[in-house]
Length: 136
Image 1: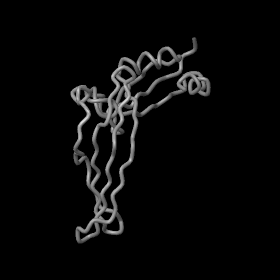
Image 2: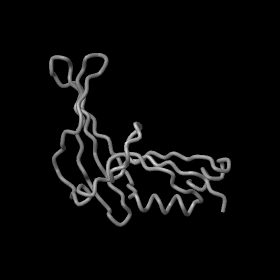
Image 3: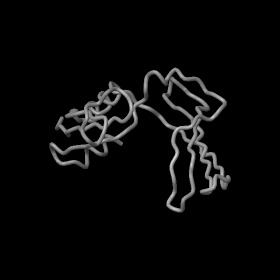
Image 4: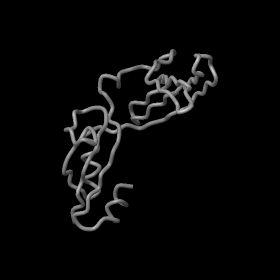
């Protein structure tokens, strides 16, 4: 994929990729039974939503994590309306791995950010990488 992106860029073209970098402290987390609240928000219709998740499986060798996200929706009075569980399977990538992947595909990394306000990358959370195509 990264090589294909490179092939479609002009010389010195930029590739910006945005991924979630794992928190190293959470990588040792084992699958757990109960859901944990992650976020809550209100919908335009006034209903309230709770988003909870739980880690179901973590394969450290392939860096793949399987989560279940639970969405619970309540009317403005607090009565439950809907409940839905969504399977989410992710593969994470670490900074050094991303650096190597980009370099092998013919890019040089120009910068690392942790958000779209261009704050410097801190090692976890969001990872926004700006890379320049280099001719081999």
